[in-house]
Image 1 (cartoon, rainbow, N blue to C red):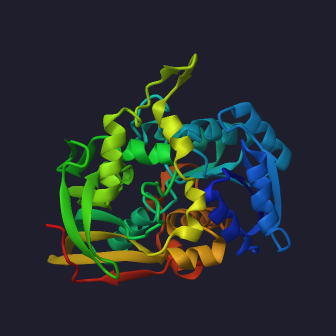
Image 2 (tube, helix red, strand yellow):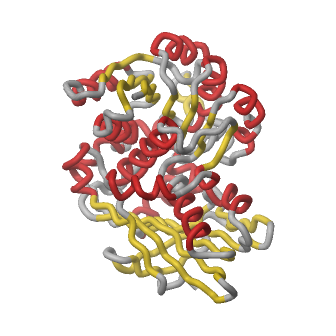
Length: 399
C-alpha cells in the first residue's frame, strides 16, 4: 500500500487517478496537484468515497521548490508526472531532493525549442543511481506500451528484431472541425516538426509529413498514415538486439491536415512570441486557448483507436513477422472513467508503470526506459486494466 503524488490535472491525469482508485491494494492514497487547484478539487470530488484516500493540492511544477515543498508535506513514495513535458526536469530535481521515485509519459522538451529527445533526462542516470531512486521514462502508450510490446516480442518470439513499425491510428470522431486529442501545443509542435526514422545506425530526416502510406488496421480499416519523429525510436534503437530500422506512423485525416496547414501558413502554430496590445504572446499559446480542451472531448467522441507494433526479424534462423496491438473504444472509455481513448491509452499505462514500481517488479536505481524491464507483468496488467492486446503472426506489412 503506497502514497502517490500525481502532478497534472488534465485528461490523462484524470484517467491515472481513476485507475489508481480501481487498484486500492497498491494505491492507498493519491494526491492530485496542478497549477489550477479547482481542477484538482473537481477530480478529487469525483473519486472520494472509495478505499483510496484522494486529496488535492496546488503546485506550480515549473518551480522546483514548490514541488519539493509539496512532496515533503505529502510524503509520497513516488511522483507520477502527467504535467507538461517542459516540466520533467524540475520534477525530477524535486524527486532527487526529497528521495522519491519518478515516472512520466513523455520526454523532456525545452519550451523554446520544438525538439524532444532523451538526452536531458538520460543525463540524470548517475544522480538517480547514487540516490538509490528509480526514474521510469515514457510509461504512456507511445512511448510506453509500444516499447513494452517491443521488449515482449524480443523476449518471446525473436532472436533478433530487424525492423519495427510503430503504427498509431485514431478513428474517433469528436464532431469539431478541428481539435487535438491531447495538449494542443505539444500535439501541433510534434506534427509540424521534421520527421525522422532510424536506419542502419543513424537518423534519416524527412520533411514534416512528407512520407505517406495507407494501412489496413484491424477493426478500423484503411487509414492514411504519415511518418513522424517519435521519442521511443531513440531508446529502442539502443535496447533492441539486432535492430536495423525503426519507423513511427500516425493517422491524420485530410480535413485535419487542411486545417493544420492553414493555421501554419498564417503563423498560428509559431512558438516565437509576437507583440500584441503591448504584451508578448506566442501564437501557438493563443491557439491552444481557443481550441477545445482535450479533456472535454470524452462525451463527444465515437469510434476506436488501434495502436501497436509490426516486427520483422529472425528466430532459429527463420524469418518471423509479428503484429501486437490494442484496440480501444472511445465510448467505452468515457463510460468507465469519463475520458476519450487517447487520454485512456496514456493514463492506464502510467498507472501500470507506477504499479510495477510500487510492487517492486520494476525497481532499480537509475533512469530507465520501459523496455529495459521484464515486459511480462506489464503485459499481464494491460489485459486486466482495460487495454487488452491482440497479436498476429501474419500481419500486413507497410512495405
